[in-house]
Image (cartoon, rainbow, N blue to C red; front, side):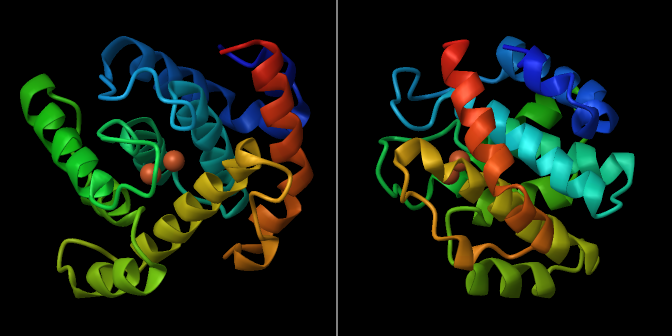
Length: 192
Ligand SMILES: [Fe+2]
Ligand SMILES: [Fe+2]
């Protein structure tokens, strides 16, 4: 699912290449524990990937930082036991990411690890753990917020009231609400 109709929009041009690269990587290499999941499918991760790259681009992130978000998007829901809150799936996915890097030579990024680890926890916990870590710069806070906004923007898949926009953390994400709805619709149409 390359989401061609969306990717060809001018707004997506700057992030089309990294989207295609990480999407293909996920399809080929990332194993999901819950392949029959209703809500946390690879299609969900693909939309989060696109949204995270878009917000990241609009925030002026470097290519490396966008890759850190891309890796988090393709791994973040891969280690779920169920479709509920399933607290702890973030830490399991982070462990999988770390092990994958060691075994397959993917470049390890501490930001990806922390974002993935704490994406299923309250911001207060995620942010305080990021602040405590000596491996991370302040920029990791911004990456965490961008990622959580991208994941939240795909909550419309749960229903029209799936997202309370007041909880979004970045202005860029607030501007992408209609885009996220359109993305979901196009993604469902291509049935992937
Ligand atoms: Fe998750
Ligand atoms: Fe997610």
